[in-house]
Image (cartoon, rainbow, N blue to C red; front, side, top):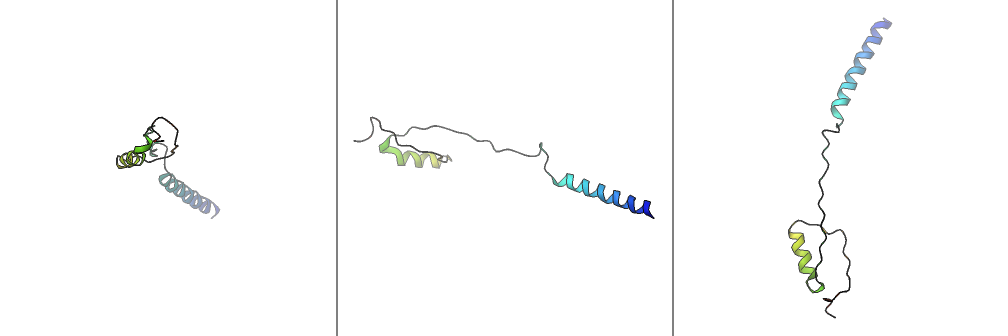
Length: 74
């Protein structure tokens, strides 16, 4: 009787392990996103139009900093 119980538990554990292995992603199946980065310099007077153009091309802004330069319009 005890050996039948142990055999049944072993079979249940093996089936559970098999199911768990099928549900967990494998490193080969995991696809990492590919990222592209660019650095753009847009004149102050054309900043909004330049950002809109880049957005239409599918780019997303991560950081913007206004720097003083010769095209300040000041």
